[in-house]
Amino acid sequence: MIKKSDKIAYLQKTKKVLETELQKAQKKLVATRIKVRLGQEKDHSKLKKIRYEIALIKTILKIKLNQKDEKNQK
Image (cartoon, rainbow, N blue to C red; front, side, top):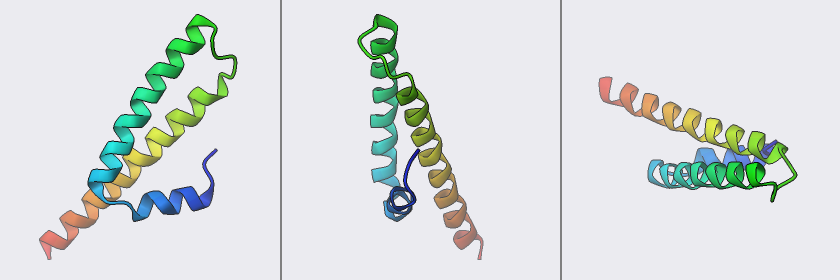
């Protein structure tokens, strides 16, 4: 799993940086899936870690979007 300090680091990043990180993580997931299928990667837990990271980034992006919407409504 991701450390608490890594989660905090994600919260401090800008929206553009998070979107870039999300794209990298999604590419990493595809590459890891291919390696697992071909038998080049024996550690299946990497898939779970990458999916968790993707979910975390998406959640933080939603939080940032909601905060921005709330500021605009006031």
